[in-house]
Image 1 (tube, rainbow, N blue to C red):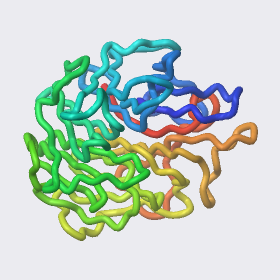
Image 2: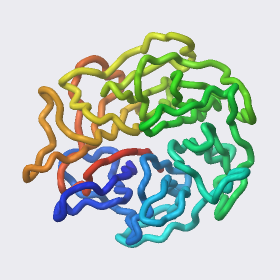
Image 3: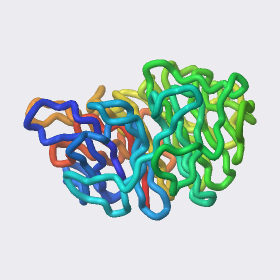
Image 4: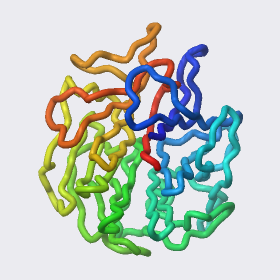
Length: 317
């Protein structure tokens, strides 16, 4: 389990920008088994992804003079000052070097492709996984026909279904679905209309292909892989017992456990994650088929985790 964290805690809490790695069975106030941190705070974005070889991809929007980029860290990278193996930047036609804001990341391991949700482009850029430096995408999905317009002020996620090849994209109008290989100013093959004012994370079950969405209403919606239009979720995790306060990025593992980054911990009757008077963020984990106003089966929370504001989570080999 790879958790990307913002550093926004008071001095002395021990948290920092970085990616913290835990076993998928981890629970409670436990330390990560590995960390990926840099002295120059290059890790300053809301999403991460891991390819089938264990390489870690993290988005970086402009911070402390670092260029907008996707940073790639080698499998098993570990330490407090880790340099990326490479970075991926892009000069848009007529634009300055770099993205305005790279957000959601998704990987198609079979075709060795990396999908990047570019907030500035209002679209998707697709790179080969081995790309480095100032690179040209092998294709883009953008234009008025795509309906890709991000929700202002939110971090928009994407997810790839490795079985169907469909790419799911969060947008102002809902969840857009593009078939594998889509390129140019193309309409989505279908869309799922949502009433959420802010969608933050998307994930697809590797087994059932169900689509998981975290929302600005602090809930998790689960849709059928064939959902279209004004579809009713198959189930929803929502309510005071869930502990969801700041729903962020999410991931789904092969057993359909769902992992949710909760940027501010504690809500309703769920015990908040408070240590030394500071309210830490956490990772909330539910088992397969969880639904309703249910507490997570377990959570990662507390100063030993290194979290301050966990924003994204990914599952890797």
